[in-house]
Length: 280
Image (cartoon, rainbow, N blue to C red; front, side):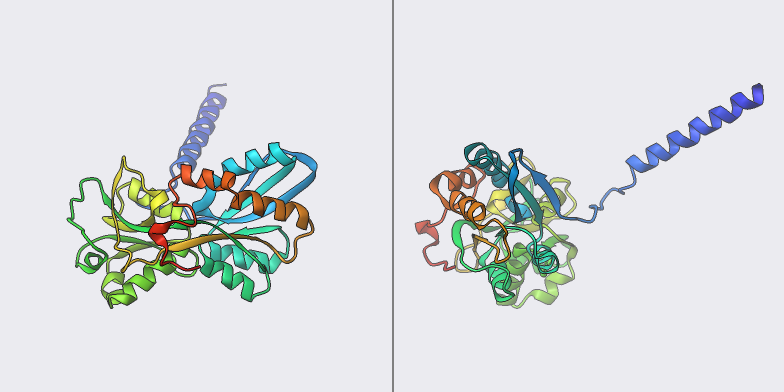
């Protein structure tokens, strides 16, 4: 009996160790690899649409989905991820109804591949420099990203709109090589850049205005002459099986009512005189 009790205790100890290991498998300083996330609003089971959307648009789109479902009885399923990843998924599956990336660059890529046609413009994604609270490294411009010894976090150039915008800015000032020596991570979504800065794992990063968390970071405005401001479009896919519902959603998001949700979450709304020089 005593041996059985000892064996039982050993099993409990091993199980507990495995459980603890599973809960702490992500080491400090590392961010888990990103995969597209799916969010669904409740609605009529007879009608629903699938929306491919940039991960940085999640906050306003989640709210829009709930309001849209209540208003029209159409459920909305979101597939959030880096725009590059979403384009690949659309090419493979040829399923889904709406595409809303972080910038017109990714929308044009999808259009060139026959995945979408017309679009409407909703908001601006405005890149900003973010630094740790109090700016302990005294970073004042994107040129400072080339300063030796800094830890810089950037978005993946192939996956994210902010990654592409950042690459253009670095090329403009001919500092790509110097900055690359300081890059500690390139993330597949902008949301993970925000997490990295919130956790204090980088000295600076390029985010967009809507992603700034004033409680954990300071934002430094990039002059419009140096910046690569992004414009956020939305449009129905060419392979949608429910074009009426898809277009209804596109029109709702691009309406004043839909744009108000983006304004609520820190996006400048299109058109804005401050960004009149920025063309789609």
